[in-house]
Image (cartoon, rainbow, N blue to C red; front, side):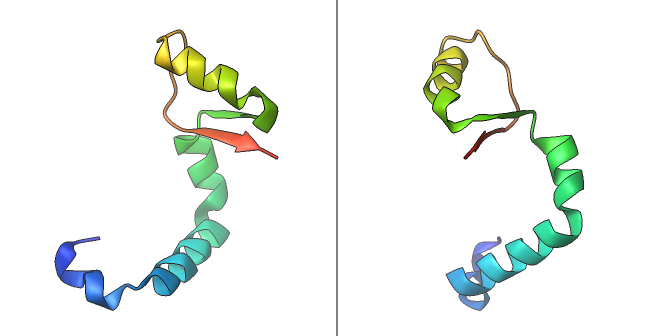
Length: 64
């Protein structure tokens, strides 16, 4: 958020609005911005592959 609005957006408000956004648009966000959903147990492998440039991703999410 712009620095000038920081006082109007405390952590609680930001969290609440983020959850509302995800409730309404979560599927579109998932479809267009998250390129990899992998089991949590594979997280270290994914991070290693990214660091070694053997994997390309926009956003990775670790499923639990």
